Length: 336
Image 1 (cartoon, rainbow, N blue to C red):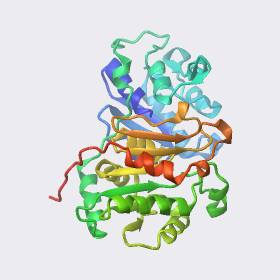
Image 2: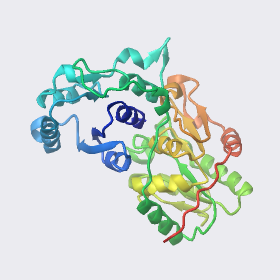
Image 3: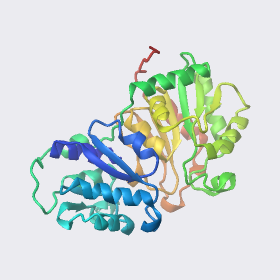
């Protein structure tokens, strides 16, 4: 969702945007964007400064950049202390205003919050801060590199996908499975394996040739195994836990027929890449976290706020949402 702000700032200042973030996914997601300059990451924002070399490197790089506009998306005090250590003057900073998070008591979507931030100027006047139509940058955007398209074609060929339509299931996120199966069962984003299996049966009823890919990290393998077992260990379903690093996942989303996902990062990536999407919400607010993008998106759940759970969603409703997705024209890629 931050790509909306990056693209807006690139248009306003006419030069690439450097990004300081956290998390190993940051490089893979943002470096391919033509609007991005350098991407730096820190391993942890909460580790004490003296114990975190990646924070030292970030401070050094910020100092080396010299003066210029700095747009601060974080409100956490550890991040603000890093800017202070780097000597970033307050008049160079544009900080996120918490009052922009809502409008008339209703949460704003994150892309809309970022556009409000990007339309502001630092107190210190800098040239080339052009006035542009911020709405033109509202939809998040990701870029898939040609090498990653070739990689995912090889991966699909290894599983014998051929020309079969590829449909993705994203059953969890990093918080869902932090504590393994038991943690997943108690999380508001959990949907039982039997429900995923019934969805798969409905998909195969409509598209007998379809291959279903279960997406997830290595720690989610057990949960995905439960879904595969509920579906009868059919070869038409692939447990891809640990086999989809971010570049490959993005390339797969670019080519996929569709995806059914809980509210999590890959759902937002799917939306940005135009992959037809059904996304299921638990206690998080769709008004704040709903994915947006150029393709078809159906949002289910989240109506009861903190009391909402994905497990309350009926399989029939998810099947109907998937069946009513207007499918995109399938991109065609071939091995060189």
